[in-house]
Image (cartoon, rainbow, N blue to C red; front, side, top):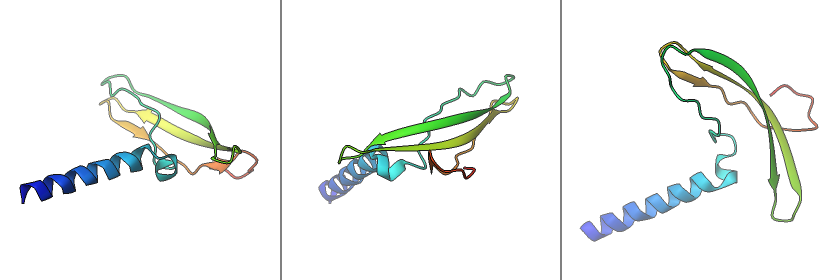
Amino acid sequence: MRKLISVTVASLLVFLATAISSPQASAQARVDIFVTPIPNAPFSGTIHVDRSTVMRDGSVVRMKTVREIHRDSRGRIYNEARTLLPVASTETP
């Protein structure tokens, strides 16, 4: 019974690791901007993100977005994620 549970847990961990590392699985949810939570050092800012992805066929897909990031006086982080849009788009992310 323990062996079955161990195999199930190992399979789940491999699946999660694959899903997290796959660009398609985490393109919108990926947190690639890290801010250290430091108390008494609040700030806010706007980050312009440009992301290029080389596809298997060799084509390049370029995307853009804008993100707001804030840290309050208690060190809590607010990191807003918006939808990635094609670079040629005139929409606001």
